[in-house]
Amino acid sequence: MINTRFWADTYIEELDLTEKLLFMYLLTNEKCNLIGVYELSMKRMSFQTGIEMPAVKKILAKFEADGKISYHANYVVMLNYLRYQNTNNTNIRKGVVREYELLPEQIKSHISLLQDSDKVHISLSVLNLTKPNLTQLNTDTNNLFSVDECKAVAEYEGYKAEEGQKFFDYYNAQGWKKGKSGLVITDLTSAFRAWLNIGKELKLNGAAKETFEDRAKKLAEAKK
Image (cartoon, rainbow, N blue to C red; front, side, top):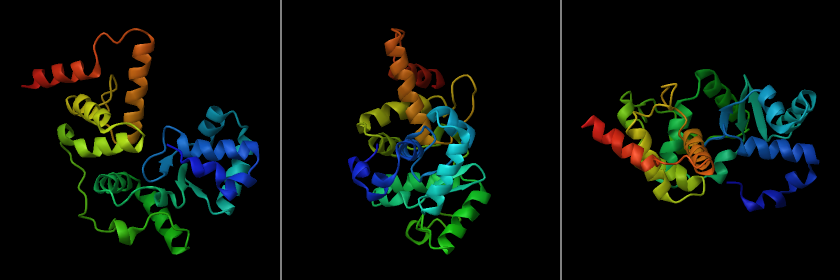
């Protein structure tokens, strides 16, 4: 969710209409996650916002010069993004660590360079992300994410913890794999958003004969 104070920010006030649109898009697109570091091409930015490619390049360069973002190897790094996250919450911290660990080494190195140049993004000392043994990505896909992490993501997205529980029950029963593709879920926030959208589409189309909860129960029973 976007904080309502977004519109009162003095930096935002000075942006023109197109710049405001792109800045808000960077904060709300489906790729954005708990740490504000995600892969997104300029081509997709242009396609989804309707802003011409030359303008996208120019505006991103402005945001970089103003110390708001860094754009490197098709990855967006929203500077100071974690200042607006409740990292005192244990579940949020776990999610932050997991998202960071999933980043390519090239992007982690880039973030370190930003740290060295005082363009603070992630407080490595506070989150202890430099400890290699802090978090081990579970290779058992049946227990890839915890129910607490799912609840934390749901609450972060503005939903009740119960939605996170439903999301957990459904995908944990499927071994955290995406639909027909069978690919293992790595981005929990994006997966939760997609799950909600699928549910809404089913209801709109009148096709929700079997709820996610029912499907999860059947899958769980089948494994016994």
